[in-house]
Image (cartoon, rainbow, N blue to C red; front, side, top):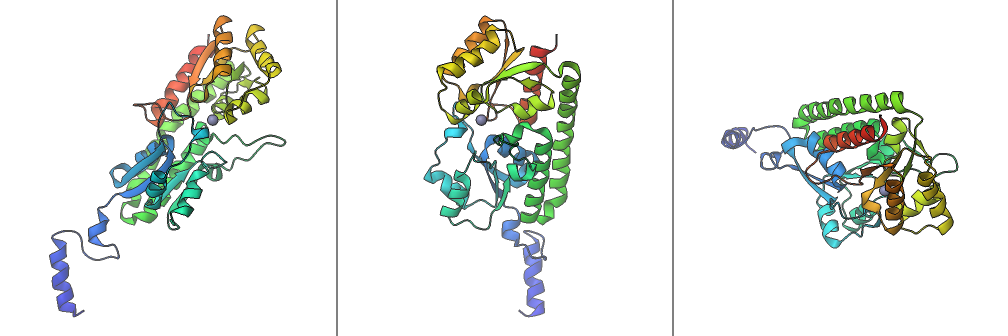
Amino acid sequence: MHPLRSAALCSLVLLVAACGGTTTPATASEPITVVASTNVYGDIARQVGGDRVDVTSIISDPGQDPHSYEASTRNQLTLSKAKVVIENGGGYDDFVDTMLKAGGNTSARVINAVTVSGKTAPAGGELNEHIWYDLPSVAKIADQISTALATADPANAATFTANADAFKNKLKPLEDRTAALAAEVGGTAVAITEPVPLYLLDAAGLENLTPEEFSEAIEEGDDVSPAVLAETTALFTGKKVEALVYNEQTSGPQTEQLKKAATDNDVAVVPVTETLPEGKDYVGWMTSTIDALQAALVP
Ligand SMILES: [Zn+2]
């Protein structure tokens, strides 16, 4: 193009948007399309991206068990348009990779929480894939989201970094409170119905006495044998634990039975969930969970 005509065109465009650089003015103001497998990661993406992101969370219904989620063609369409994708990994939300591939989206930046966390299965055990209950890993995920968004929208990189830092600053007091719990009631025995809260319980120094056969069966949506159920129930009738940390999103007749045993034996029940409850953000949710643990365990 003739330089003069180019300059003239440029000054015309200036009326609408800044001219120059390699970004197209028409798309520079479009928010970045982000898709998260659950509303937990969706909320973190929103904290980091602010008004520069358009976030869709595939699983956000508190009445739904994410472990048994069946993806739909609508999810595939949503994922096919994503610029940034946040998945948990570790077998939790395999449908994300499947649908990205099926929809032909090979350009999205995919953040895998398990990979970011660096967590692996313990010797002879299974990986606990509920990474979002591990506060240090969540801080790392916020940084990864910031990096991915900056790649999609370099002009706002500093904003994303500042937002991620602000989010991490809110995690710090939660980590401090968890450490304080460990100092105060560390070593206290508790039971769970399903592994979702285990990273947080570990950080609080609590000892999980639940037979693994019980919590893993509940996670898989299976029933346990009468012997395993009896062994788990004995934790309450025998007053072996101080609290039952109860996953409300993976409940069933056997977990209900356990909750009744806890209540009947004056053992505190601390409710937890897999995804964000209605009307709470990540930090507010974790704050309530730590509040509930503290209320149950600190005399
Ligand atoms: Zn779970």
